[in-house]
Image (cartoon, rainbow, N blue to C red; front, side, top):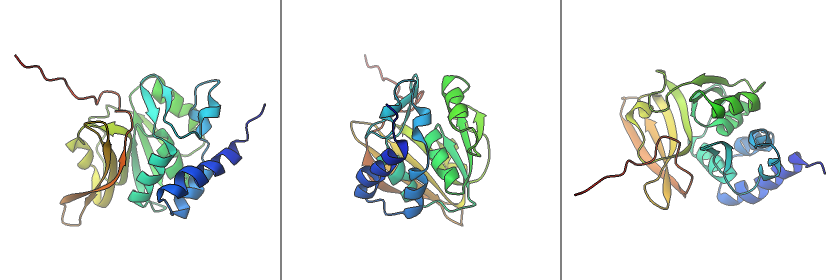
Amino acid sequence: MTLDFAAARLNMIDSQVRTNDVPDLAVQDAMAHAPRERFCPEGKAYLAYAESEIEYAPGWSLLTPRDVAKLLHALAPRPGEKALAIAGPYAAMVLARMGVEVTLILPEGPAKSVAEAALAGEGVTIMAADLKVPPAGDYDLIVSEGAVTTTPDSWTALIAPGGRLGVIERKGPVGKAIVYRRSPDGSVGEREAFDATPTLLSGFAPVAAFSF
C-alpha cells in the first residue's frame, strides 16, 4: 500500500497546526511541502505525521509537528534571514522552504548522516559541531529541536541584533518554550511562548547531584 504523504501533511496542518494557535500561513505552507517522512527509520514512514516525536537516529528525535509549528511561529522567520538549527533537521527543512538561509549543526555520527540524506537538495548547510560550543557567528534566527535544562550562554551569544532564539527549557515533567531576543543595544530579553514536553537533547540531560 502506497502512503499519500501529501494528504497526510495537509491533515497534519488541519489537526495539529491550525488548531494549536499557529495562523502563520508561511509556516503552514512550508510544513505542507516539507517531506518529514524522509527522517523516519526504514519501515516507519507511516509515523511521519503522527502527533509524536520521531527518533531519526539512536538518541536523537524530531519535535512533534505541533511543537515545531508553534516554535517557528513564535520566531516569525522572514525570507532572506540567516538561521542556525541546533540538532534541528526538520526545523531546518521547514525554514529553508520559507526562504531562510539555514545552517544545521549536529555531532558527527548517525544523526548527521540521516540529516544529510534527508536534506539533500534542500539548500541546507550541514556542519559537524559540538552542540554546547557551536561555531561562532551572528544569526537572525536560532532554533533547537529538542529540550535543554538551561539554554547555554554559547547559544545566546550567537543572536544578532534583532535576532531571536527559540528553545524549549525543561527541568521537570513540563517544559517551556522560550524566545530570546537581542535588542539593538545588545541586551537579551526573553519571554515564554508555550508549554511542551519534548525529549531532552542528547548530552543535555541534567547532571545528578549527590549528597552525603
